[in-house]
Length: 531
Image (cartoon, rainbow, N blue to C red; front, side):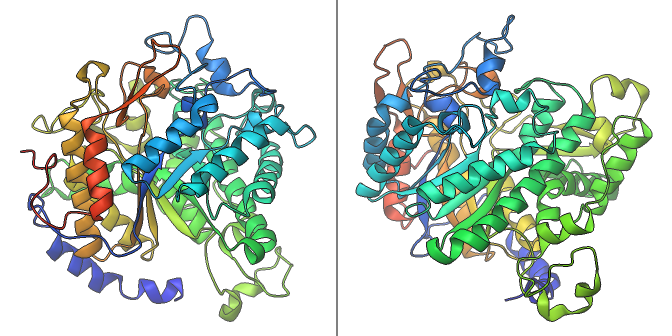
């Protein structure tokens, strides 16, 4: 089905959605379609440890967490993490015990290419991931690989990092090697996990590696990631897909942005504008080959304040590479004549599915841009918006991540309506709790039960094509800028013990039952019946 055909039904579908999303608090007892996949997600830096072992090179997070003074609240790091480099067999046993059918993990770029360049390949790194993949398959668990989850090799950062377009070729080489080495067994690939978070927090807020504060770098980071994604997608499509038959997509982080006053048109306009930046900055070019109007307006505002000189448009060649999958016998990208021949535009977009990382919801209202905003409030500067939270929303261990399950359904419907009903994989969804909570993590049980049920409504009532759910995360490991002060895991890890023993929590039992039942077939859910 062409994307053009899909969009002809959007108005009718929007009416259906508006009529179906009113029952936010009604629990739905039903199951997901046959073949729905359940599992967990992780990232290499957070869980593997072994940061200097077996020939691994240094990445930007290794550098970032060892700064003095430390940028991490508890001064911790993931030098050992959950020690999954040595205990991956324990992790696979836990995945099988809980009933996971898929496990998404990321490759440590410097564990495979210590300098980030293709001229030095580390056999120990290849061996580690081969062992993990083979063990997963032996236990009936599908391996899914994220090529890049924020841990850029430090030597490439020394060249300028993601804002430097030279990194595109190094990333393409790395991806090509990964497809060649693991693609005979791995059929689902994520090019980047949350590049919107990586570029914002790494190059503006300073809270993530490499810890810069430069708007121009952030915009160029986003641009080069989009081009990198498209180039790698083309490599897979032309070279590897005919033999391996897999799928490639990107995973974006997005909160649902709810108008603070839904009756106020200015609040609705502000929330919608922000949605088109938060999700659309990356998704729109990957689908349509250019920035959306909101992004162009944002870039214009940044230019007005002399904060960026980044291009507002992609070149004609870049746009074609990003957007057009199959142009038979046509290589003259400089000409736009091919656009007059709709029959050659067989498939649009450089994606096979969309990955969504979703945790919470914001309330949005417009605000005025003032000079003081230039000194720190980048949300106000970028979007002319103020965010807040309803005080009645259940709080978590992270102040800006309350539990708002109905926002998940709204988020899924928004993507479905605006992007042609794509296949969606939930790549991250989880609850940040305090380490003091212990094994009886009742709030996390309620979070997963309620969020998954809203996802069920989106699938069964609204017709959204969600086909996979991977919870974040399996283990209590290092949590980026929070260290070990919060955790997301359904399995407790004792980091004070040298063996890092693992103990399942109540939430592991919760997900075990949901996975086994493929949803909520009846009301007899113990430990799920929590008010």
